[in-house]
Length: 149
Image 1 (cartoon, rainbow, N blue to C red):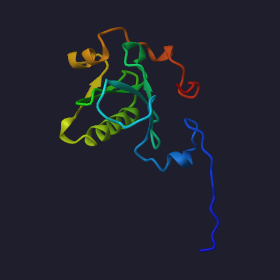
Image 2 (image 1 turned 45 degrees about the horizontal axis):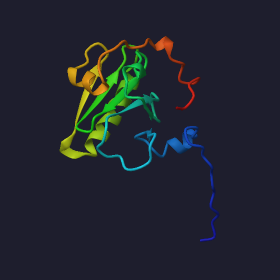
Image 3 (image 1 turned 180 degrees about the vertical axis):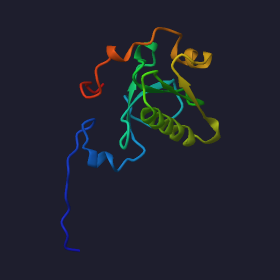
């Protein structure tokens, strides 16, 4: 063929927009390696408003939640998409799309439950380990200032 191959280096969690553009449905960073399968609940913090959503695994705890972000609490049989009161429609849409894809990969064994701050279900609180106070958005560093977990 006679062509030359271009090689680009990307550092995890600092990927370029060009790299992220190949993953239109978003990137999910998990703490442990291995298959994405049933197990203990896990929670993801969803960032990115438009083209390149990114989700990072965070502790399954009320202390992880804040009013300015979208979270996915994955119990395998139910995927909760929780959005804080200060999130906008773009963030909520990306979170819901990501939760729906996670559920669809499992087929009929999983459902998606969207939740708004202040309207959580008992099942959500049970999976999270109990009720608690949710931090205000101002208490959490801005997206640009936030260091990767």
